[in-house]
Image 1: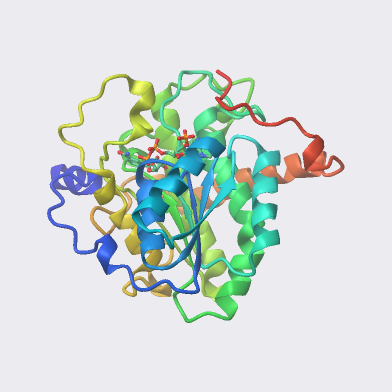
Image 2: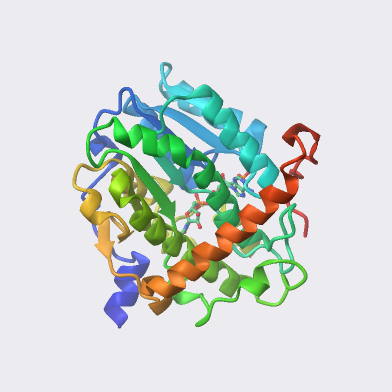
Length: 333
Ligand SMILES: NC(=O)c1ccc[n+]([C@@H]2O[C@H](COP(=O)([O-])OP(=O)(O)OC[C@H]3O[C@@H](n4cnc5c(N)ncnc54)[C@H](OP(=O)(O)O)[C@@H]3O)[C@@H](O)[C@H]2O)c1
């Protein structure tokens, strides 16, 4: 139990067997990283660009996204990095972002769903009335991934086996913080203040694993490898809502990126690993929450996401995305 806690959280994980330098050449491949203006997402995007991938940095704040692009270009003048405006807190904006990408590219080799929110003030919500953590980490990423899926499948059909991948960045919090029973009523108005921020984060990260597991099953015949992971305890902006935070046990964002770089690019990850969960550094690990492994519960979460996103888009189908309200720069609280 203690060893599981230590390993599952990625504490004392030793030397990483995989690093940015180990990423194979990505020439001709297109990657998309959400939440890439800072933290683990930024380091991931930079490492992929260094290996000659074309990398889309999907960021909600254009200014921050542009700064991230400039930082990468400063380190590598010929980096092929492109900004994609994506606010996961607005389903209209999510669709617009995915459609913009689809209008520009004919392939998507790797999608890394890295953006995330942790423990915002109780009652925080997205533009569409979802609790902010779930609305961003789960609803937004579900809609984004589903809209991009036809292109991902098409890419896999004409690419080497095991090379086309989707990566969900989850967390050890799926175990430490998630409630015993998932509460989908608590993620939508009028109940968004019902659960405290910590269980809401745990639940959201548990559902990230479930999303990856269901999608892995659905895409097995299409040859798309889908994994999820805990990046480690990483000193990043993720702790922004927690005030001054003890970073002494935390690792760098560079190390935080290695497990997702591994899932996204290592030749050791194959279709046989689809659905697996990884922990620091780049190690397959059994998820620790019973609901993460329960196929019925996984499907329940998936069906919830499908219904919510489906209902939203049918309701808003008649309205062109340009006439819909823009998402606020900062989430409503
Ligand atoms: N750091 C850790 O210890 C740790 C541990 C376990 C799991 N994780 C997971 O790792 C992932 C990356 O976290 P991190 O440590 O890199 O955190 P971070 O530095 O705070 O980065 C999070 C990214 O998500 C973006 N984001 C937030 N809301 C968004 C929205 N509505 N639309 C689009 N992008 C949005 C942020 O953009 P802004 O800069 O504009 O806010 C930022 O780019 C998260 O999924 C997190 O849950 C991290």
